[in-house]
Length: 207
Length: 226
Image 1 (cartoon, rainbow over the protein chains, first blue to last red):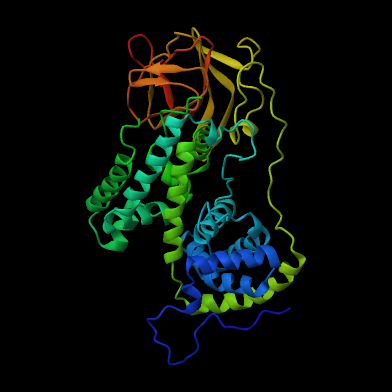
Image 2: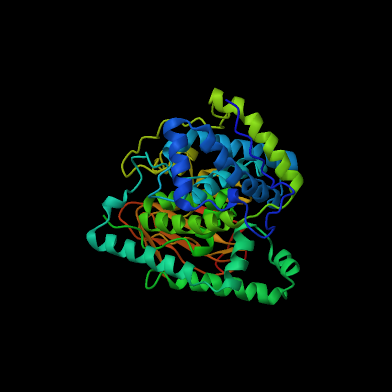
């Protein structure tokens, strides 16, 4: 069955150019349902909607991280094929669809662009310490520390979040950030230090 | 069961979550995660942050978007075939049977040639001072040197100087230094040019994963490079 044709590009229509294209404004619930439809019913229309939503983001991400156009397109195909094949393993309780797709894109581009493997724990490994091994006290601490970090992330100053994003997500050097944002190098470093300090304080009295 | 008390710093955790951190330190972080439910949650929070940045990406290059339309059509056949792309799955050796202590968790276990607590006189360890050994096994991953450090109870690691970051992850036993004591799953992180004095602090030998970015120079009694 061919895909229903719905071009990625808005036509030369009377659409408000500032308005997000519908494909980019799918809300979290809708994305959950689309992944569910792909997992349960192998629904290609749902897949096409996910593709229209995520493919431009994956492409942009890979280009930003140094892929050439054809490699970036191969990565888009790779990531979206993984979405198709692994939709059944997506757990909305663990992460949003956007975060799940990000982790797939991250792993693929490390593999492809850096030719490195990404070490990760194996949840099926009997030697892994399950969360259930925590004492009640430790469990309470876990929940609290996770909440504190969420709050810290949510309360990051916008300009600190931006240097964090550029440094870790776009992997820019301090110099590249300074050049792109026309900030003095010292300001970039200060904001990064402040951002990390803000996140670290959420650890509280933990070492 | 006591969970780890000493964790990798947030720079390492967010770097691991975003994919910015390279393979060497990621191996240590990932192995710590196997011991530490707390840091697993922390990494999940940082992945969610990266996920939100990913969702904000906008691609305005119309040429690229046009290419994606064609790509979606081309994928039709792939979806029907439903085959996974050839995934580079490293062939995993069977878990090395531990001779005594706990099994080292993944992902480190697959990297190790054998159980970590082999006898110190079987040729797989190199004694650098009384009661302190480095493993013969050594790997370099993305510029980071990786091996095992072993300390007998009370044996101090000889004075050394390191020009870049040094990281330890406890895989068996415990050790202590002037900053605290470290047990199973704990991470000790030392920045370049700092002094620290680790020594074994458990009845059994303490065995750690040892990561070093730069050169390690042991010092003689006068504090000069040996």
